[in-house]
Amino acid sequence: MAHTPLPEPLLRSFGTLDEMMAARQALLAAGLPADRIETRVIQDEAGPVEGNFLVGNGRTTHGGPPGAVLAGPEVPYEENFSRTVTRGGHLLLVHAVGAAQRDQAQQVLASHPGVDPAAAAAAAG
Image (cartoon, rainbow, N blue to C red; front, side):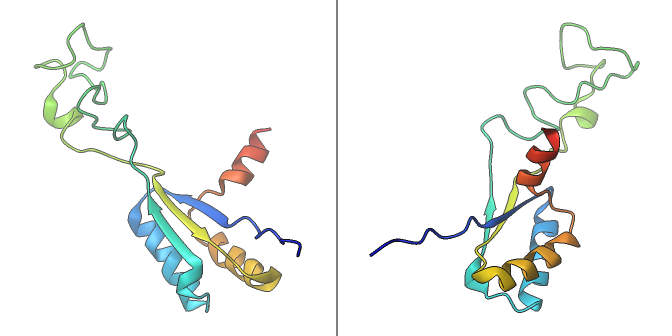
């Protein structure tokens, strides 16, 4: 018996957990089954994109590039390191069954701020 491969899931990357969960709620409200919607939060070994304790944000009190040391009065800790920001680590996958469900999910996702990695890659060439 021939095996029919499942279609690729619809994938969206969100900047925040709240954005991802809002999109999930909209999909559920539109009638998509909860067991067809998967959420993932990705952690990276490099750490957050801002406020990373190893590099910080490089903002100095004088506005120029920091000297050899990335701490101290020239690069204040509170401004540069205390608030971490993680972006794009919130993934939503929709395992739609059939063309109608896939179209419905795409319409719902179009009204949310998630990034379609496949479309972004195609646009980049």
